[in-house]
Every structure is written in C-alpha cells, then in structure tokens.
Length: 213
Image (cartoon, rainbow, N blue to C red; front, side, top):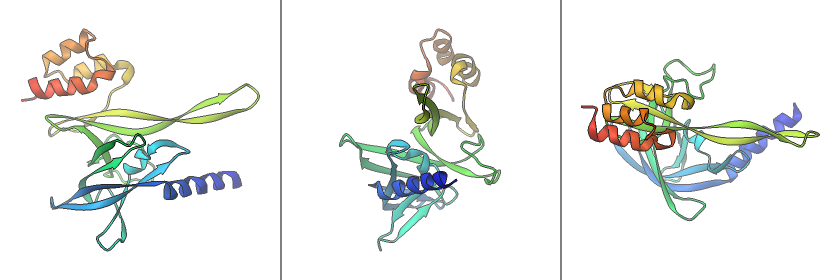
C-alpha cells in the first residue's frame, strides 16, 4: 500500500512540475470567447508530450490577475490552444464538450449525464474526434516482470444532430459501412478496402464533401 501511495504521489508531482504554457481561448455556455493562457500538464512517467488524457477531464488556465482556475466540461462549450511541442513546432488542439454517452473513461462516481472534452479533428456534417487513453503491456525477461504504459487513440464520430459513435477497429469495414450507409461513395471504398482504419480522416472528409445532405 505504501508503494502504491508513493506512486500516485509521484504521478501527481509530475503533472504539477512538468507543465507547458499554451495560448488560446475558451467558449462560454453563452457563446462568449475568452482569451487566456493555459497550463498544460505533462507526465513523463505515463505519457509523451502534454498529458492529453487529463485534458479530457479538465484544463487549467490563468486569469488576467494571474489567478489559476480550472475549467470542466460542464462549464464551457469548448476550448482551444496552441503550444510549442517537443520538436519546437507549434501545435494546436481544439477540445469540445460532449455528453459522455459512450461512457469513455467513466467511473462509478460519474453521473449518467456527465460530459467529457474530446479533441475535434474534423468539424462538419460528420465530425471526427479523438479520445486519448492508455493500455498496459507486460514486459520482462521471465524472471522479473513489469508493465509499460502505452498511449492509445480512439476515433469517435458524430453525425450532425446525432449521438457519438465509435467502432471496433477489428470490424472497421462492416461497422463503418453500416454507420455511413447514407454515403454510397464512402461505403464503396470501405468495401473495396480503399479506406482502412488509418484512412478515417479521408473517409470523414469525403463524406462531408459528397454526402450528409
């Protein structure tokens, strides 16, 4: 129990000490835009770069008076920021508050109508979001074993006026063909395996160009 307690303490310290500033804005529930400086968490023990899984639950920012505040999905419509990544390139993320109907990363303490921030990659008649998670993979030499944390990304789709949708990557062709039944050109490419899981952005872009009227 002591080791577990120390582990969570170290994780918390890492999130606090290893942070990056980002400039951007958030959109209030009244659709007002507020420009702020965000404090973006890092946790080298668990995740490369900024700690994206935490940004799905909350994000910290500073007011004009340099007071630190926290935004939760239920308090705003969205937020966006640009920061300098580890390659010294500017990178932009836009997170949108969505009802967590898929129970992504939900716990027993979350209410049925809880919300989550999702990174919006494509906005349109068919929107594409990315959910950031992680999985543990065993490592060892047979004598001593341990686990390595592996970051994961899950594409989430949403038709205009519809609910969030996710698919089993092992059943990509069948499940996505059924979901995008109203776009024959995309379904044809799915069936011909011209669109694979790695081409999800292309499939969404073509749907928004040719279909979904």
